[in-house]
Length: 305
Image (cartoon, rainbow, N blue to C red; front, side):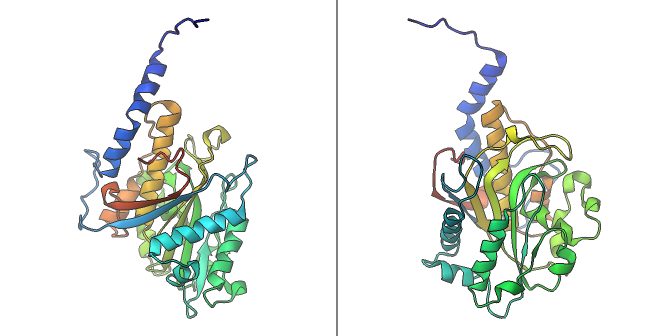
């Protein structure tokens, strides 16, 4: 039996139109088109490029949201091999840490979406395999100013999520606990987060950035908003030496998911700090046109064209 035709609502039309142009929008973003009137200076070295690896696996998180650490470890090792252009994980890890380093792990303990403890322990083991003592590798978030101050080499790891002040909680913002007064960096959409990376306690110490996209939070309003309806299982992780490039892609992932979910682009807070980290502080590449994204594994629902 034929079903009666349903009328097309304005919301439905907008959703369909937005999804139909999603591929074109992604392409434009990945070609680095800058928004007019952003107030951010142009990059000083437009030829500079960055490399980011995205690894995904549908089995890394189960239906209950639990992490399969074996799958995660395999994804991480494969991602680092692709990032460094080597065949063996041991060789890849030794590109970041050596026996003379004093390594540390900057984690994130945000209550609703923290860096999994199992991931922290796995990172300790991977770093220790480079010839270091696992027991001597500190891992912390809120005590970064004290426990990580003497470290010479850092892993920066956290989940990606929507953020009230900065638009995205990513790798750049994860170092905010190295300063005495973190809230002093909240004005102007956290534009000056890059300045933290230039402080003596941090400068040139972060060797590896890992942005977890296992179950990201793509939308929310208010400083303490967390709605699990705005999480989804993406089953991925990004790795890069470049904190700016990895956050630029993390922000784009959240933007694309909002288009898919709402049928329209819903900016939350400007991610101004990502561009400023490049143009003012020289920390990396923010222009998506100049980021080489290597995609490994599961392609369904990847969102990036």
